[in-house]
Amino acid sequence: MAISSDADFDEMLNRCLDILKVKGNDYTVGKADTDRLHNFRTVADFTGLTPKEALGVYLYKHVAAIYAFIKSDGQAESEPIRDRLADVINYCLLLWKLIQEERRAEGRETLDQRFERVVQS
Image (cartoon, rainbow, N blue to C red; front, side, top):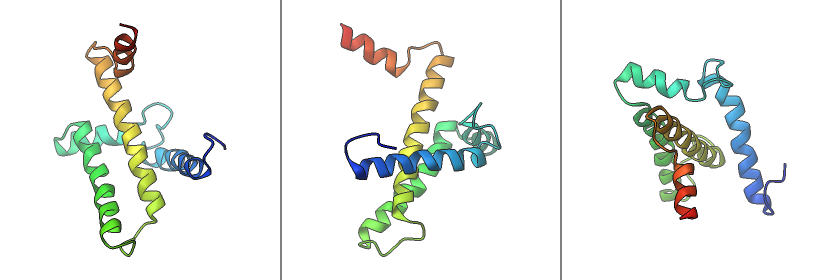
């Protein structure tokens, strides 16, 4: 599906969407439609971390693998770099959702609302 005018971006964004669909169901124990953050909440409860910290651990794993790929000039690759990069993009999206949900639960304006307020003033 064309999302932008750049084929490389479109390929990566479509890969991100594919991974969100496939892994989303696995990581949410079938609750992908109701709670995309289920896995992070469960890991947080199990480990005593916050959901954001749990997500950070997963994110770090991929960032470390990308760094190894860069340092080894592409030689360190147990998983395709495209998928590692897509996972990082997806974890950033999931972190965004987690932050927004936390702000709503606390009765605070979401970051979108704050941005709109600042832009309009």
